[in-house]
Image (cartoon, rainbow, N blue to C red):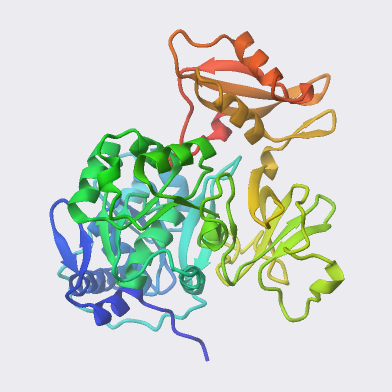
Length: 499
């Protein structure tokens, strides 16, 4: 018999019907209010679609998004959250690729999208209730489009069970990062797995309180945090760097008990700067869209260790694997049929490892990419992330780089992140991104795009001399000064555009 999927909003409304659920600049809703809006949205979706249809949601961090997203799940349809900042061709691709039967959105900026115009609707918050279908844990819940490193985005297929599993895994941490008494700042975009499941859905899972913020501004968000006594922040490095420089940051963060940073590496010096400004330690998390999204966190290891991504969540198995398939290191829960003694591996006897690709297994993993499940977990449940890391002598993991961004110079491995860290240490550098370029002599060479932090900017020669004192000769990049780097909505550099 199939196991029913959880409905976190219905559960929250049953636990705390009058409890404050969501706060915006205009209104405050209880969990009973949110539940009613979700039911109305579900009725609207059911009346316009068939079971299993995809529903594209092109909205910001708004109450309309909340109702549309949870309403789509309650209706037994598949939610496809998309960035409202996408260009017309990007939206058109996602609509077409997902086969969206319905598009929930504000009025578009362009009238050139026939698919948009023919399928776009507003969901009436007062719609009459419809008969709800049974939704099962193994049913597909969400398609989240990942940017990837090249080519078109791919839709990662996440089930209701995978989304719920990640909450259970985080709850198993002692103490849990969030609970029912928390007030959570929801500033991460809901179209991203981090903002969607670790942020919005976690608030519903705990029947906690969420403060919605559609556009991040360091000073304004601190005022909002102080006004509503926020106790949990979920952010990216740019947010914590921005907060650290604000005069009111210490008082705004006084009630905060959990500050989580993910989606991109937080440089150790920025972590120290933030901690000095606030007196708070940032918990570092690592994960991917395909893992719903959290895999590791410093909350289960050394919470104060900078530069580390911690250890796997309870219920997540993780291996570091060499290019020729040798398991270099393993942590987490192994399946009963595997004998780890034969691998002669354990955290306790590890004095540090060579870098290897992160390979993971757990109930929070996706089902593969839309529509046929390609490139998903193997028959034993293991999935290669494409990220490279090493384990230190304490058994804590440290990210090195993306496997696909590895640069081969005369056969030697060069990791762009290492060069970017060195350039970032230069006092006149605001930001740097390194990519591979073809080289007739060495096969490939690293090329750095650098944004200056000073006027006049440093010369390319100055930067190369700086790098030469810290990097082996074969790692030295050619350098190009640029005015800015292209970024995604969550602050990651779009290296695909640089290439």
